Length: 131
Image 1 (cartoon, rainbow, N blue to C red):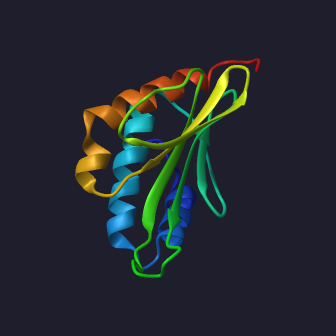
Image 2: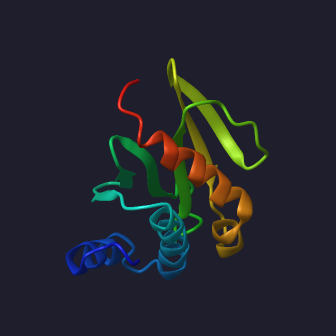
Image 3: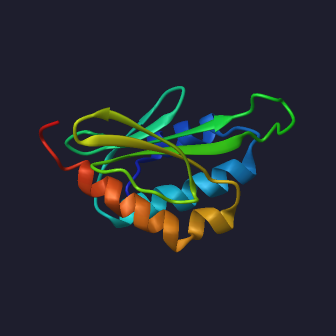
């Protein structure tokens, strides 16, 4: 990831410890975000990205314990609702903010044009200073 520091890279590696496939998917997604311009990355129970405000969150979901690698989930804040077969769910949380949850099941999903388009929409939202 081109815009991350060594400390942040190590923390990302810790987050994905023992989950190499999920790490590869995350790195592809993070590179797509980096290609839209600099952003701040925060790592906790999920990894979030923001500029003037947070616009993207990435986490692993493994409710059934059938996939020890976890299923990469990605949520994007966009200033309008996007109807797409790739969006698992959408929730309007304020007048000009819709959270779009996406399951990124493979490296092909992570590399896809449709995901790039959604990230571009969300990155633009990250620049807004109100609502």
